[in-house]
Image 1 (cartoon, rainbow, N blue to C red):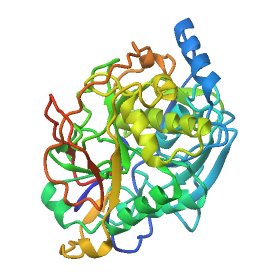
Image 2 (tube, rainbow, N blue to C red):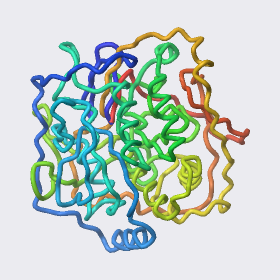
Image 3 (cartoon, rainbow, N blue to C red):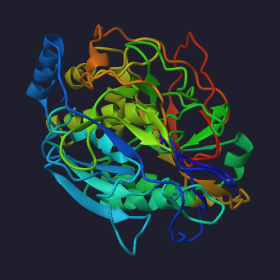
Image 4 (tube, helix red, strand yellow):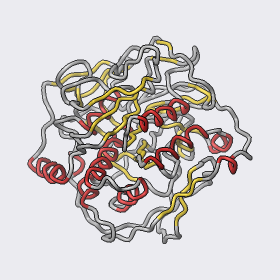
Length: 434
């Protein structure tokens, strides 16, 4: 997960940050001393147990993502034979010399592997659009740690819609205190999300990782917005990872946060990890839980292209399992409304005039990647290894949201529902994380 920092921050995709005032023009990114990540190759390729093979056969017997376009707003996606339907989108890091297929941070290529790699992806026949919006290798200002901001995130969403994407995957977060969120002028981002809703595009985003800049109780953008599906990370089949930020929004889901093998960004073959800043590590974080849900949305849209973003969200939330709202792609694609009690929700969009009473504070914000900096050793196995779930259809009560979210422009008005658990606070700091 990449993140946006308030003030002087770092965009971390697991590690990247860039301070930029949201309402201001995009600065020119400059290379810095941070070297590009180095992939750790492996001679092995994705492999699946008989049970996993059966799972994938059943899932892809229903849908493969064919005909659905997914925009991945990230650090770029490396060209590879595993991505036969990869197309370039704009580059908001070095727009004068666009290089959306140059993934210096490796983060975006791992996300794309989970979504659409031919041999391991959940939606292997979906079309992918690479939009490069953040990077640790570049900085927007001398005192920043990376490139990317809420402003370029908003621009990236518009670019994804211009490209015809029905799914927008954002493994990026901006963490900030509630006081900062109250005074944040986020109209550009709100407008972009409103357009996505009207254009029929579903936005999925990381819930964020706990670290020095993102802490429990903070507000996390864009996951805090009601038209965005927030995704937390699992460390096991039904257990949330300790690093996964508690979500403050009322609806969310969780998915496996570790990717054990991914497409190699520097040529053919596969990788099992990467060296960043001199340290070797694997791929763990909410950044890598997010693409599982993004890919599942593509499967749903292939089966029924007429589904609206609101209907998609109902299916995603309604099919989640256990108190930790575990997302299972097969259970979700097979899910039929009516098998579980799911309250209907109506999205109400506030007009710009109703939000102008707030005195906007031009916060400098940095984008950072959520969940890319895990240092866990990787075990080579299929990406769906954590999806061998007991796929019960029984619904569970949803925790009740806590805390005011007055910084949001998009709001969902829900009918009262019985709650048996209290909501947990969000982890995040003023930055975009993957």
